[in-house]
Image (cartoon, rainbow, N blue to C red):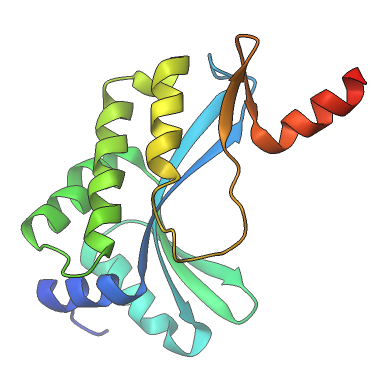
Length: 166
């Protein structure tokens, strides 16, 4: 198996990695929404061995099919993100604008650690930070949380609510 060095990983993640925070509806959560942070690297299936080398380097995460002929290395465990991924990139600084996404990702993880994601105010703040991340990745609009009549909704759900009221 390929042996990886920290500086190589930093450069590779600068070009190919993604610090992502999703927010999904989940009726079991106190706010009705769940915050899902993840660290992801996607590669063509021909380069899958590098994803397995990353998994071996860190000792956690999963390698699985992503989309089409692409595979991904993904870390979703809060413990692994907070105790391994964050300290790694604090020590081995990213050199591109990806570092700005990393800093926002780290801030969101700290907010989760402080349980702020369990309040409406904290969730709205996390959403605001999340929407500033990975802006060049896609031109399609992203869902945004809104507080309407003391209830959290995604902005795309608002049109459904408004049309049902007319």
